[in-house]
Image 1 (cartoon, rainbow, N blue to C red):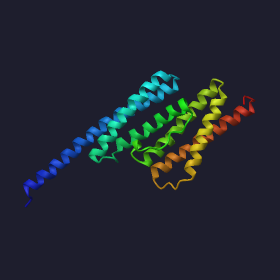
Image 2 (image 1 turned 135 degrees about the horizontal axis):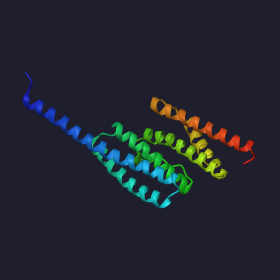
Image 3 (image 1 turned 90 degrees about the horizontal axis):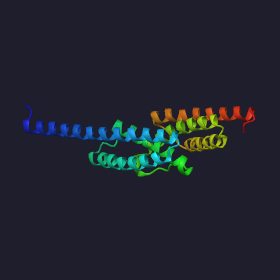
Image 4 (image 1 turned 30 degrees about the vertical axis):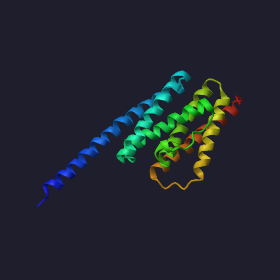
Length: 192
């Protein structure tokens, strides 16, 4: 027969896990939402709003990281997605503000989250390049292409074994191709 006291311990452990997991999911949603707001503010060329959101989101990520570490839920799906979106958003913010590619830090929980976020960042850089080209700012278009090229070159040095990350890396190749085609077209038209 089942030991009822032991079974109640198991039930309590499962309930505690579910409770902690819900907290991580809720905090992940906060980070995800603010990441999207940050990207949007940067695309709108609103540095004041972007800086404000960047400060908020960094505080929210600290809360999420602490919560995930204390609950040992570092591989929770919602957490991974939120951190990857955070890397993309803060990476885009730092690129526009300081002309740098965001370096890896422990706040990203693990290297896979960082690399996935970098892959997603190339999509935002491509979008920026197209928008800047449409406005006649071809230097920004060329600069974005160089950044995507740098990220692509960095990834070529890695032995990527994770399927999701490999798929995301494929998107970097496509983004780079789009930018090369765009710059080729601009060159043929005599714009650059």
